[in-house]
Length: 169
Image 1 (tube, rainbow, N blue to C red):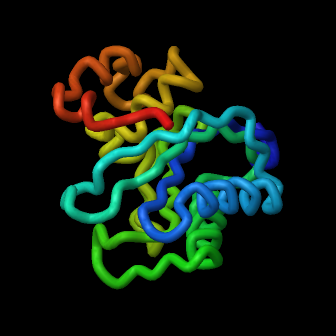
Image 2: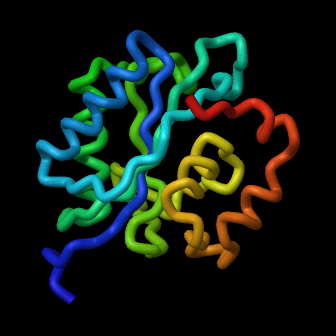
Image 3: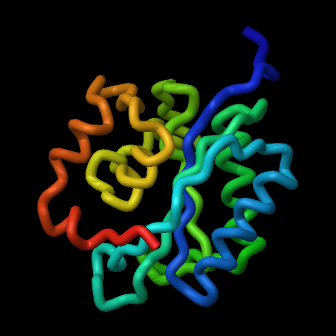
């Protein structure tokens, strides 16, 4: 299989600083300007900030994309877009204008021990309501590549507080 053959991936975009909806739309625009095709976009979802709910709420979306980039190249583009949108990486879990995470890349299991530290599928996907619910909206038959558990089952493992704290907007 040629490396240039298109692959499908899922990415999550979140923002909890500034004009959150605008930052999400700008991130989508910039992805497309980098030759990444958005196949499907979830609705926007609002959730409390994690791990500190006293910080500003997040708005999140999940996208299904089509790309000819490798997972590592895609990660590099995502980081570049975060920087272009004003993301500063001072302290973990600080409010940010834009956070872009690759959730799943072509159902592959990837662990790179290089400067990227890329791990796919995203290591925390099954614990994150702000990923699982938007992902279910656009891909109700998605299955976790490592755990071999479908998304409906993963959502059922979320606790009631996680399910109640997310709001489609």
